[in-house]
Image (cartoon, rainbow, N blue to C red; front, side, top):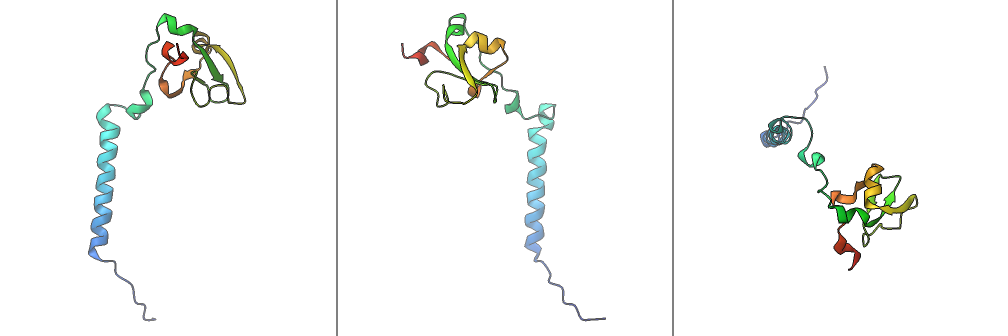
Amino acid sequence: MSNITRARLPGSFYIVIGVGLLFAAVAIYFSFVTHGEWTLPSWKRQPKPIERAQMNVTVWTDKQSGFYYCPGDHLYGHTSAGRYVSQGEALQEGYTPALNEPCRQSSLGK
């Protein structure tokens, strides 16, 4: 047998690993189990209701992402696979407002 010297990890290493695992377990519990389902609450966020007058606002739809953008947004009219439609048409075609915020009349600069 050869003389092999094994390095021992300090006891504080095991404490740090244990605290990290405990923190991860608590985070998983409060993120998933307490809500009664296995999805994060932020994933279930629904768009705000849209008033009838807002349905006529012209938006830019992006076919690749499935989102639509309001006038004044950074990507409004700047994506390669997109077109201009009314907000009502975009919603009927299954597009989702970017950041789940529908376009407002005030964003038109009136």
